[in-house]
Image (tube, rainbow, N blue to C red; front, side, top):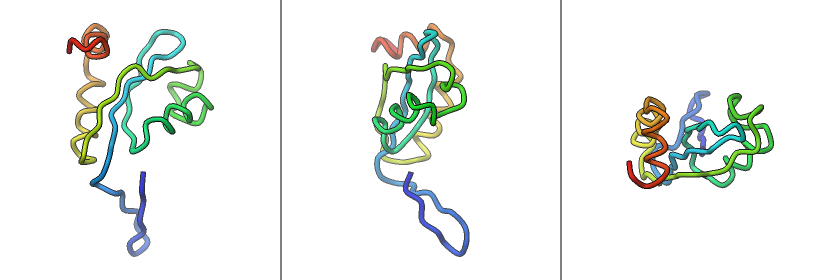
Amino acid sequence: MSITKKRGKRKFKREGRFWVYIVECVDKTFYTGYTPDVEKRVELHNKGKGAKYTRDRRPVKLVWSKEYKYFKVAFLEEKRIKGLTRKQKEKLVNGKG
């Protein structure tokens, strides 16, 4: 994520391109996240430098992603997806949700 410093505080870029994504882990579980660069983020997950959840569940593969213009919208969509059941996430991944 693009970060600018303003008076000693970190400020995240709030507009641009943000992706909400779902990866499927080697144990067939799903992990949902958001990022400004989905390809780089999946690469980080597979190097063990992504989320703690995915470190012991590698390799992961990208199974769904959607682009958003605003950080807040992407962040809220990530939270919504994380609250879905496994079956609801499967429908989303399969284009039926």
